[in-house]
Structure formats: C-alpha cells, structure tokens
Amino acid sequence: MTSSVETGGVTGTADKDYNLIWYVEACLSNALRLETYIQDAERGKDTEVADLFRKAQADSRKGAELGKDLLRSRLTGG
Image (cartoon, rainbow, N blue to C red; front, side):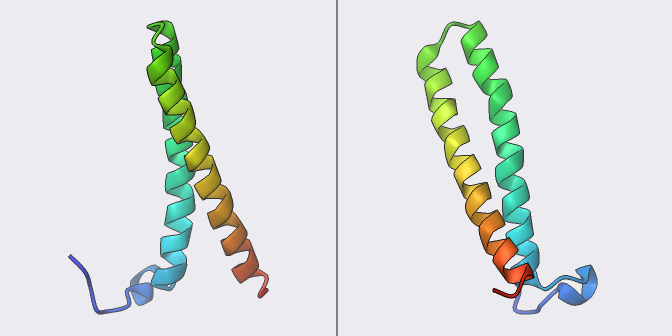
C-alpha cells in the first residue's frame, strides 16, 4: 500500500527524512535483537546459527552506519 500524498504535515518531518530516520532506528534495533539471538544460539551450542546471526548483526550495524552518515550529511547541509 503506497500513498501519493506527503504525510510530513502530520508528523512534522518530510517522508524522505522520516524514512531515513526510521531506517537507522530499525537497523540499530535489529542489531540489539540479534545480540539476544546470538546468546541463545551460543547457550544451545549452535555455532552455525550464532555465526549466521553475527553476520546479520554486522550487516545491520553497517546499514545503521551508512544511514547515520547520510542523515548527518543532510542535517549539516553537506
């Protein structure tokens, strides 16, 4: 479901900016959640699953860093 209407009037933040902020938060939240999953796998001595979750966590961290860099540059006008 997509909208052809900018909803920034409701949130006070333009959709493209809100979406970028949401993306960073989602990546960071995912990295935190995956830490729990890694610990669960390690307790179960399942290194294969723990390694998978570590890779996913690294990807989430990378996404957050890329998003933060872009957001930072937009907020500073550069």
